[in-house]
Length: 340
Ligand code: 5GP
Ligand code: MN
Image (spheres, protein in one colour):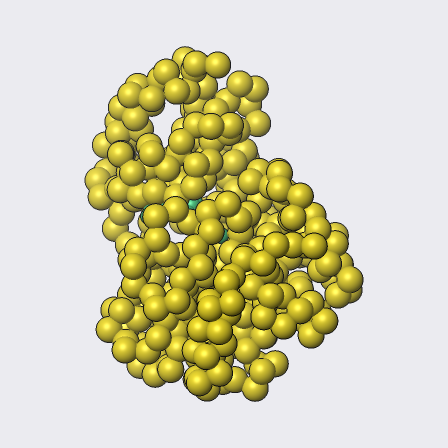
């Protein structure tokens, strides 16, 4: 059995907010990943089952390898529907700061509607009326599973909800290869399997669903662009706009690239810099193993943050300047990277 996450008062408050509202917006962070999409869709399915008019809205497009998810055809991409947000409750999933909403930031923060936050990132910003923020959770989907089961038990949960929740748990833990040592996770997977989900198929839907272009690009990145710094146990890959064009890059094509160099023995940190094609900046991704604090490095050098082992940020400069900043960061963190 799982411990209850919410107090009775919290449950009452949440039920009152949801009971009163008919039009509900369910949203997540910009560039949605499997956990964000899983949480948005699972919560939307739950609300539709309750007869609510729930509208899943994401700030911008999501990768093709998530387009198989149940309910995905009902997801609106905000960029394309600028004038249609008039909800009574806004549910914010898998992010904890309004600036992660991109174009949706202003309509959400301007809105007088009650806001609910369910999230597992560090340092939540105070902008919601009802908040569950649990950093120890593997994923927002794990957190959401526990909330839904506390609200109404496992019995009413549908196959579609279970598929979406499993997808988020699987993608946010690298298929249960990091952030995944708590036994509750496997208890929950056991419960989700009783709903008939095919976890092997879900794995293939996500990870055996890439384009040939992505593979060419991956080969190029590993062969030509990967720099390994043995003195720092760290690696760096960079990707320019021109290269993205050359390899017909589509949203999501570089997903997971940053994790690959961690497979180099002794490696503790991987940094990936990509020129953004939508905005004029450089997206930074950091991944680490063990206790190396990516989030500290991201906050100190890359205007970002995140989890201990997975963080991100952005830089407004040229790629050459960004590489210099990475070198500075590696130098500053030498002892944490090499003391073992
Ligand atoms: P990714 O490398 O996949 O873009 O991001 C990894 C993690 O870093 C995300 O799950 C999120 O927690 C965090 N993250 C990414 N970009 C930012 C950012 O710009 N600001 C902050 N605070 N966190 C970020
Ligand atoms: Mn997440």
